[in-house]
Image 1 (spheres, helix red, strand yellow):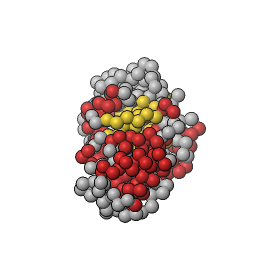
Image 2 (spheres, rainbow, N blue to C red):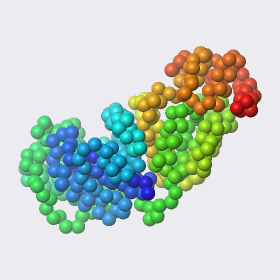
Image 3 (cartoon, rainbow, N blue to C red):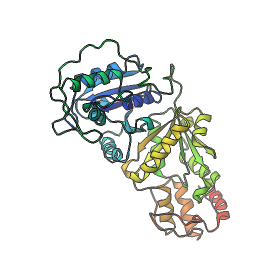
Length: 404
């Protein structure tokens, strides 16, 4: 059973949080919602209140547990046997702090992965702070938070027990609460996730099939950074299909068949849990074809995030049955990309330890035989690609494989 820990302060829980939890249930067998005791800003609700509000909002949802947490998130995740820490991202500003946090957690415990989902576009503008800021001035927050939270916020600010915050910016220095009550009054039955304010366009699975992810890319060529993401994904998914895109628009150095062979050689020995398949259609259509619940992507820097952010939202618009799941690249591979590898080799630079052996041997041979155009290292490829004699690469690949 694969378990994810979804940590946060949840002061209070919003429909953006609920959406992410539900989507996490499509990927993991179980989600533990960890409500932290400390918050970056003075909290409106106590930890006990935040736990209770979350439990009410998730009432009736299977395979979800809500717990109070104190201390390091990654330590708690390890003690509960979690495979991953689940996080959501809304914008570039989220990425910067999440990037550091994910790498630090990986430094503390490499057995617990951090995976990311991009917030659904309906909730991109929602945060607990913004909701409290709006509610503190009497703004309409209906449909942005679970019904029990909406009632509680209205009661607090209507009674004058809350301090007004600046809508859509930040709370005042002393926080929102002028006097935080110790208990939550009994409100009776609360809205379930099937209520209009919390509904999604999919249902939670009644039974859990094998979880398949696709890992799409041009892989021109595959690097050790790609392989690191692939190995880490096997901790979360039962099977990963490496989808090698035709992607002629990128002027690839290697043909589609050659790139597929590189990947097959690199993953040899992993059994049936990894497959390699070429494709030339929409990624979401390929995901549907193989019943994938997730599209796997790696993130290295803010530059990656801006493009991936748009792509993930578009893919979610096209297909809501396959989530885009992000892994932060391990710090050893933060600077590695296929383009940088090709640029370095085109000037005779060493790529030892950065790519699989077959890739290294083939690319070094290309350079030694004068079959590569020069490229500006760490910037980009020549407009027409790297190969001076594309026809010669097939022959070189054949001989390199025979020699090995």
